[in-house]
Length: 276
Image (cartoon, rainbow, N blue to C red; front, side, top):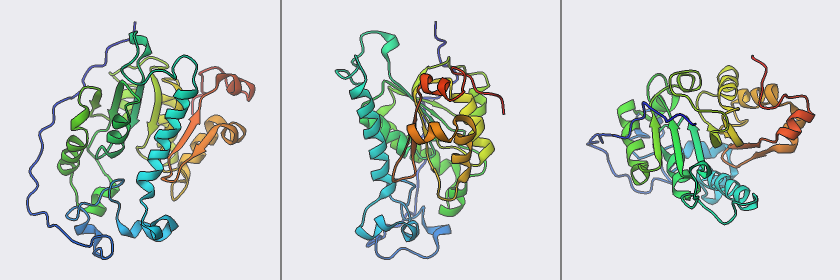
C-alpha cells in the first residue's frame, strides 16, 4: 500500500505588492539596472525573462521567448510519450478508473510556479508534487530584487487554478528524498530536477529520486553555465546511454527515458545506483 503524503501545505496567503510601476515598451528599452528593477517590471524566469538574457540567444532576435516555448516542447514530448504508450493513449489525467493509474509529476525546485503552472495546465497529470523550501540563498532573488515573500506570492498566483491536483511541499529535496515524507519507488511518472545545479547537488537529487521515477527523469539548465548537470547524468548513466535516450530542449530542459533493459545492458543494476 502506498503511503499517503503528509506535511503538505495547500494554504497560501497572497501578499499585497504596492508601488509596482507599469512600464511601457518593456521589450525595446529595459533598464540597465536589473538588480533593482526586474521585480518592479514584472520580469520572471519563464513568462517574461529579462532582455539581458537575449544577448546569448538568437531566438530573441525574432521576438521569441525560448524559456516558454522550449518548456512547451518539453510538455509536448511528455504528451507524445503517453500517446505512444500502450493502454494509455485514450486517457489523459483524470480519466483513469483505478487509483494506481494516476499520473504523477514531481517538480524539485518550483520557485515562482511558472513551470508548475504550465505542467498543471497541460492536463497530463492527476497529481503534481512541487518541492521547494522557498528559503535560503537564491541567485535570481538577488538579481531581480525579490525576497521570498514575493516569490511565494507569485507561486500562489501561478498555481491558484490547480490547487486540487497540486501538493506543495515546502522543504529541501534531501528532506523529502531521505526524510520524513516518503514516496515509494516508481511513484512518479516524471520527475523534473530544477534545484541547485552544481554537480554534487544534481547527483544527490538523481540518487534520491531516480528510483522513485517510473518513466522520465528530467530537469533544467543542461549545459549553459551549469556543467554539473551533464556531469552528474554522465556519472550515473554513462555517455552511451545518454546519447541514445537523452532529449534536449530550447529552454535548456532535458529529458531522459528510463529503460531498465538498456540500463542493465550498459552495466547498471535494475533500479540500483552505486552510492556516490
